[in-house]
Image 1 (tube, rainbow, N blue to C red):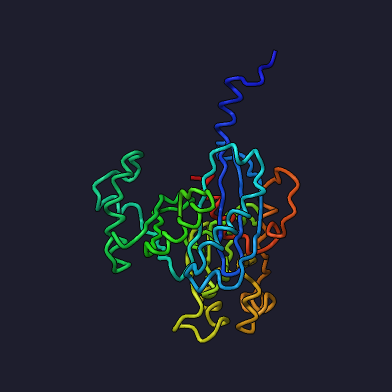
Image 2: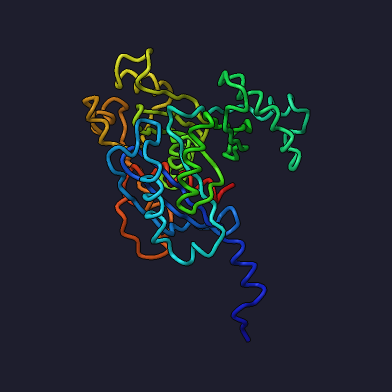
Length: 330
């Protein structure tokens, strides 16, 4: 005998997490929604993907110039959300531009010592917040009331547990919260674009590369190219171009790859922007001396239904996917 509304079914449904990643770019709003049942080995499902162009003048650098236009784009992006997603609690995270965001990683032991709580104290981790805020004030040079701060304990496998902190001037966050609220969306988290993209690429590496294989992750945004070298799932080097210490992008890439020979580089972001510095994917492969794989989120989870948005196969999906990934993994 079966019961359509059994207690067991209710528990199973509640155990499935749904999360949305929202990337408000210079030319488009990108949305990825994923789901995952509770459990570390549960399969990831891509529930929905949508790209909505932004009209000229909607964005002015990192500033939202036309909040009504951005709110309309957000509303349009969510308009086709499947009923299965709309009826569940949906954790929504939005990215902030790299140039408007300060992202740092601090050893958990250091913050725990400052706050006087145990490193793995479970509920006592809430006591870390004063230490986190003090750290943000120190590196941002602003008082905490002028900052919007988000932080979490990074559970990525590493010899040293760490806390990732993202902070921005409150005005940038308030503009995005207002646009989201106008579109009927409640945000649960913020994150910097590079960090969200890196999370997406590390997830891709865990599924597409051999265990312990050293690799480089690259993300291209409107304010430059960000790169990280990962060995045994630990960050051992990073770079940003343009920067005073690098003559050109090739110089920055060569500086990043000192160490073990690489077999692969993962590439994400707005790849077309490479044309502005006279570079190509082939040039990256030549400088790094390895294969370059463009990021593609369609290969990282089962498609819950027929999805046709080109975003599923574009490297530019990395930020939205990384934001959604955070929502189901936390």
